[in-house]
Image (cartoon, rainbow, N blue to C red; front, side, top):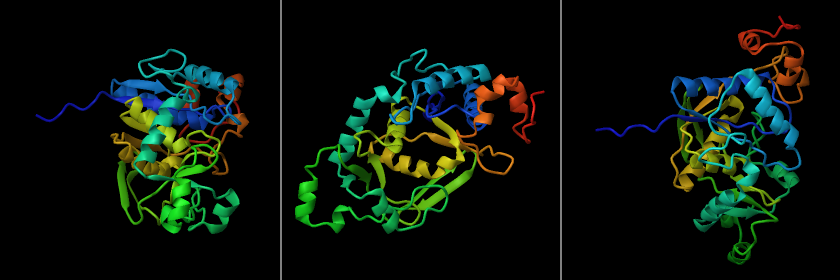
Amino acid sequence: MPATPPAYRGRIAPSPTGLLHLGHARTFWTAFERAQEANGTLVFRNEDLDPARCKAEFAAAALEDLSWFGIRWQEGPDIGGPHAPYDQSDRRAIYEAAFEKLRATGVVYPCTCSRKDIAESAAAPHETGDEPIYAGTCRPAKLSAEVNARRAQLPRAGVAWRFAVPDERRLEFDDGSAGPQAIVCGEHLGDFVVWRKDDWPSYQLAVAVDDAAMKITEVVRGRDLLVSTFRQLLLFEALGETAPAFFHCPLVTDADGTRLAKRHDALSLRALRAQGWKPEALRACWKGPLPETAP
């Protein structure tokens, strides 16, 4: 008999770098609805790995604003759960172990290029809001055996560590919202950072590690992260983990067609709530322009 599929586990994972806006709410509401429809579990994860930008007040606001909006989760930093801690800043040891596993298998290498170096030598332009394709300047194959031997002894901190993307490999996945997706490594995707120079994991590594550890079966997020999915698929594979399914939602835009960002303070959930908006009225506006005043 075929194996019984695992129980549905979804997640919402805001980064506390500002107030959540209507676009976040739409994506997180979709994640909430899909978990409900599957009679599954929704996990709240606080992605607070950027100490310069992440603020405790924004983390607290996200919990309050999403709760006001009507979203309910069964695990999270406010209520705990079997896969705690749910604040990424408290999960450092887990990321370190994953990085050392990657390093031991030889799929990562140290990169000493500056941002200026990368911008000037990028193998492809920055076309779709994603990062430019790294030219591979620090790839071991381009360096002498002596240099590589010295680099192998470098500590984790002080340099960026990149994942060596296999050239010309075709990656594919079927997105639950956007349909079939495919890229060719080296042509559409370059070597990417998994451990930052400041001795913290990159978004790509932390997200893949956490989704695996928290047994997430479907990731619901915005379409601006479609390319990131291919990076995470490579990480799941390298770490010996099963990748979840993916559902990338269309992005919410303002009146000029520009996607919403946290700088759109007037469309933050907190500001809209203060103006007298109700969650059900906001959800009714998702298919059209937002009226200037609350109904």
